[in-house]
Image (cartoon, rainbow, N blue to C red):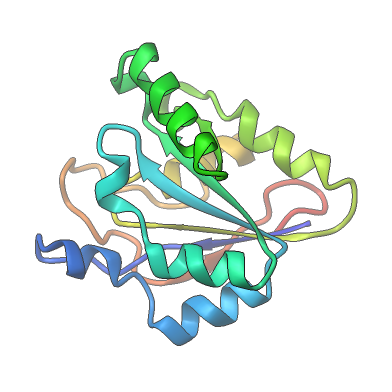
Length: 168
């Protein structure tokens, strides 16, 4: 299983700038190369950070799309449950994680369910915890994380990491 770790460029505060993670062509190319697409969202404001283009491309090309509500430790459990149920009612697969607290069991389960070599992509706006999620999956710090809260765009492009023996 290969895991592509995709991080967007920093935005200047506008929603449009935050969601322009990669060019549409780059999103399309990386989704087509993937079996599973993880869209990492901040659990505090998941609807605001969704990338509808990414979701359309994944679904139209038969890719498994998983919405990941990261930073779930910052939101009451009842609110997380409501968001997960909301997305599931809309026919979307949704899980909650907290990379900073080491709770990424749901992502690990999905990666292991494949039982074969696959390629998975992680997409998301700046500061949603993509680097922290990859570091937690790896069990050590490989993806650099900004030490200054609220400074988006620390990672500036596509990065590939080895997550497990056969996961990149």
